Length: 299
Figure: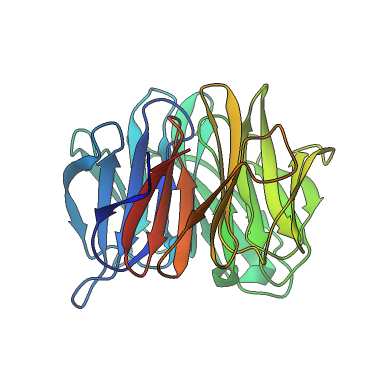
C-alpha cells in the first residue's frame, strides 16, 4: 500500500503497541495545548476521543500493551500522572510530576515507571497501571545530567520488568529491572535516540544509530545485526510483524525500511516534510509523525 495521510496537522510524537492488535498513539500541537489521540490501525480510524492538554515532550508520555492485553497511555499534566485505557475510556490519576514515564511489567501486572530528578539522587517509582498502588520505589544514579535530558525505552510486555534509561549526552543506556529495584546492566550508547523492540525469536533487542549504520544488539550486549543506512539517521522504529523483524529510520530525504534479512534497505519511502517520530506496528504499518500530517504506509 502506498504512503497516505491518516490525519492532518503537525505531529510530534507517535508510539505503537509492540504486541497484540495494531494500535498507535500520537501527540500533536494544539491551540494553546497539545492533543493526544489513539488509533486503530486495522481500520485506520481514531480510537476514542482525543485527549486534551496532552504533553508534546515525548519523554512525558508512554504507550503500550499491558500483560492483560489492554492498551494503556500514561502522561503527566498539572502534577498528576494519568493512565488511560483508550479502548474503554477508563482513566486513573495519581499525584506526581515525574520527569520521565515508561511502561513495564511487575509481577505479571502492568506498571507505570516514573523517574523523578534530580540526576544525582533520582527516584524511580513503579505504580500499578490499574490501581495506582505503589509496587516499588528505589534510587538510581544518573550522573551529572538532569533526568529531563533522558528518555525511557520499553516494548511492553515483551521487555517484561526491564526498561532502558537513555540520555543523549552520555554513552550508556542503563537497563533497570523494576522488580529487582536496581540497574541490571549498562549497554554502550551511540548518543543517538534508540529503541527497544521484541526480537523475532522472543528476547528483546536494542536498535540504535551509529554513524551511517543501525546497530541491533541483544540486551546482553551481543551484536545481532548491522544495517547500512543511505544517509544521516534520525528517528528509528522497530517491530516484529508476521514473524518479520522490521526496522525503519528517517534518513533525511525520506524513510528507509529493513526486513531484518539484509544489511541494505528493502524499501525507501519519500516524505514531504520533516519527520519528528516513527513507529512500527504489529501488522507492518509504518507511522510517521511529521510537520505535515500523520503519514502511514504498509511495509
